[in-house]
Each structure stands twice: as structure tokens, then as C-alpha cells.
Image (cartoon, rainbow, N blue to C red; front, side, top):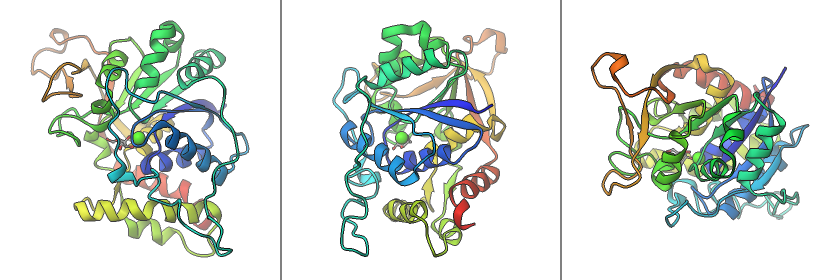
Length: 326
Ligand code: BDR
Ligand code: CA
């Protein structure tokens, strides 16, 4: 039995890698994709989700719905400096051998319902079985909670890439991007009593894809997915190397991998809250890790991944994404 998956996402280079990983994984069936404003505006994120599907051509095409175009109460902050103006490393201008755009506007359409309603519809259709993986700001999930908390709470698991527990943030000293962009949404989701699994920077920063490791796997002749991988990661590697990161940090692919195989990470059950009112602490995720008896701490509201078998994850990631040329 394959596990039905809904991916809420703002592609984004690492989101694109995450979607390709999920689509190449036999344990799951990607049933739905909801897009959200984050790395790029939601229109661009939606175009990118459709483009990824047009290149990957999965036998079972997931439903796609456009989600929130702005955080719950704040103006959108994007990350085009990390992901390129088009969110996929500026591949829009690339030409194929016939001088036509290599990645033309996607021709396939989206659902009439919005991202939050697609999430609720999937939670109902796959009652008790749906695994939701959230790879962007949590705006769509928060809206879905406002519309029907019980239905969302019927999901089997909600895996969230976001936050920083015992490490610094990546936008401010304390805050990770997805929680920083929509802290009200993140706070709402963490208070809602969902079966949450948090995949924070503590573990994702250990999951780094080096350019040489990807290129070694992609030898000609390249299929469309392999060519796409090389094209949209080139800019990400340039940015990462200029920052001294050593490669693309696989934040979102690790969250997908946790959905596929939770044994890749070590979890701790903790109480986590997200700061939505603070100024310097906007978007900070605060876990109760006080050195007191566990029973005296605030009751756990999620399982937090705090250790990871990074080599095993990277092997899985490369084997699945580069299968055709392996
Ligand atoms: C998160 O921020 C985004 O830029 C990435 O896609 C990832 O979801 C990491 O902080
Ligand atoms: Ca993302």
C-alpha cells in the first residue's frame, strides 16, 4: 500500500528537489500539491509546480491548487536572492538546441479550489491516512485550520520543514525562513493539536548536496529530468559556494525523506511555540528543553527531529533522483 501524500510548497530550488524526490519514491503517491507564497510569489510558485510535473511526467498526476498569495497578516518576504527571480535558478531564459525555450510556459491547468480547500479535500478523501508535508510558510495550513480544524487533524502525519531549535536561524539570528515569513501561521499550526513532526535547521543544515556529487551521477546522455536537475541547480550551487556553504542545503528534500522513512532522523517529543509578536524574535521557534524533569516541562505538541543520518539520506536522495543515469 502506498501512502497518500499532499505537499504544500513554494518552489524554490530545494522545494523542486523535494518534489522530484517524492515523485520518484514508490512508498508514496503524491496526490496533491498546494502552492504558497514564500520563496517566490504564489503565481510563480504555481507555475514552477506545474513545470516540475511537466518535466517529471508522473504516471499519476497530482492535483495542483494555488494557495495563499500573502502571509496571514503581513506583507510577503521572498528569497529570490537564493532561488533566482523565477524561483528555479533563472532557467526561464534557457534555449534548447532548436533555439526554442527549453522550459516553456506549462500547458496544464490547476484546480478551481484554493490551496487550503485542496488540503481539506485531501484530508477527507484519505481520512486517517494522508501525510501532509509542508515545505513553505504555513499560511495554507493555518487557513485550512480556520476553516475546519477537525478535518485537518484527521491527517495521519503533518511533517513541517521549518524552525531552528538549538541552532541559529537563517534569516535573523533566531528565525528560520518559513517561520519568519508567516509567524502567525506557524504559531497557529503549532497550537492546533495536529500530529506534527518538525524538521528544523538543526538537521537540514547537515544535509548538503555538493555539486561534484550530483554531477558525478549525471553522465550523458541525459534524460529530461537529469537535464532539468542540472539546469535549475546550477544557480543554487553558485549562490551556496559564494556563501561558503559547500553545496545546496537540502532543507525540503530532508522533510520529504522523513515522510518516507522516519528512521532517518532521531526525534524528541517537545513543546514548541513560535513567536509571532516579538520584534527581534519574530518567527523564533522556542522549544521547552529546560533541564528539569520531563513531566515538569510544558506538554509536548510535536516530535522534533534533532539528529539525522545524513550519509544515509544523501545516498537515498541521489539514488532516487539520478536513477536513470545511475
Ligand atoms: C526553507 O526556506 C526556503 O528558502 C527553503 O525552500 C526551505 O523551505 C529553509 O529555511
Ligand atoms: Ca520551501
